[in-house]
Length: 101
Image 1 (cartoon, helix red, strand yellow):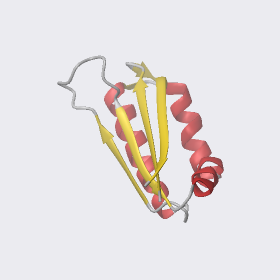
Image 2 (cartoon, helix red, strand yellow):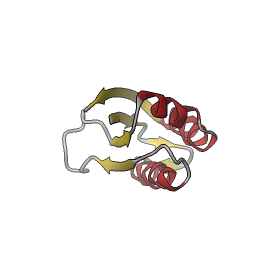
Image 3 (cartoon, rainbow, N blue to C red):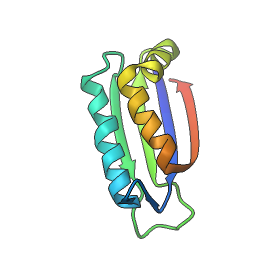
Image 4 (cartoon, rainbow, N blue to C red):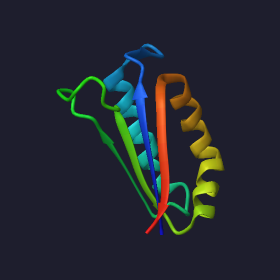
């Protein structure tokens, strides 16, 4: 199994929405991919607590796949690419790691 973790820092305002609205939209859209992309074994998105330190990342995507090849299939899937394009417009930073377990 492969764990695919991605963290995002978001702009305070973008696309006419607040950071919190953006984060909730991203959470809903990413978690919906489990039913759209069959290689996704599990996917969950967590939002940073609004009372936490301002330097924290805003979102973490925690997902699982059978193999690194499945991560690549997911990354290039049309449904994921739509969300990734949106995130690219509203994020200020991204960090990621993939590891086998």
